[in-house]
Length: 380
Image 1 (cartoon, rainbow, N blue to C red):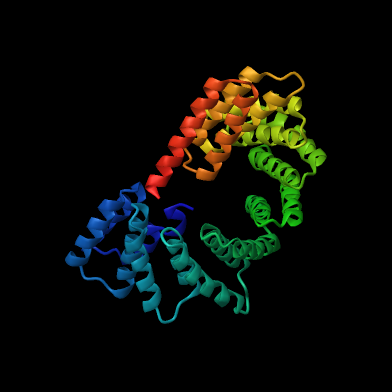
Image 2 (image 1 turned 45 degrees about the vertical axis):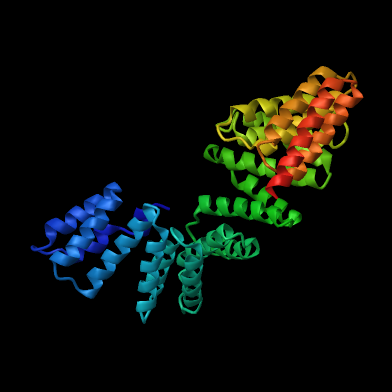
């Protein structure tokens, strides 16, 4: 959500413009519109000293200040302003609460949750419930809880928001689509796999337009991952066979989702000891990961380990290539500083070179492992 979506400076300030303050207020509005937030803060400070202001104009200037502080990374100062405004308003209208809650979301998730919780209670108690306001308030609550990693609460609020979005005569199809996907992802994260699949399947059904191809692809990959985690390999591979051709011709080609699909396919075969089938998918996954600007060294390291194991154990083993990829795996995993992961990797690599009677490499990695162990002992 943009700052203009939350707070329209021109609309809110227009009623306070007079001959004396016109030039100064119009400059403030223009600077805010252009995103020159430090300039806005300096000019609102000067404005307060230069002009007479009433309570309502001071409130608008405070809202501007809070927004600007949020935009330049001064979250604490923004949250303090919003909290003071929230506490000072004795009779809090729903519109004010929603505005404060939205502004708080930009700088302090706990404050956003506190304010928006009051807003939804007030909304639910109104005789004529504004369903769209309720839907958007629950959406902010869900996002706040998700960012605070309270996934059960986030799921509850997203579900409530979805109910209201679906009740509207003029449905926001994109928001309904987004919430189905969001719920599917969070339910999967929370290990509610059956319900997660239901929401992701519904997402796929709703994603009929070409502009929704990315969310459809991500839903298919997510379902495949869920089935893979349940060892339901046939179902997982069925979904992956559907989504991989879609990925190859989409805007997600050669991006993380593409690499994840190849990795998931490879792992489904790896987990069944079908090493020959896994190899080409690991190769494709590695090629994409290496092109990503911020790839996960842990993820790539684990992929190299599994790829090397498959090369070592396929029907016609390629021990030379397996060894090279075990070493590539270690290069990546050493960057993680995960002691347990590194110990397992060293054990696997040392065992590999022992099995191939490569004493030079075996001793090299044994010495590296001892060095690592000593280094960790000194730092602990």
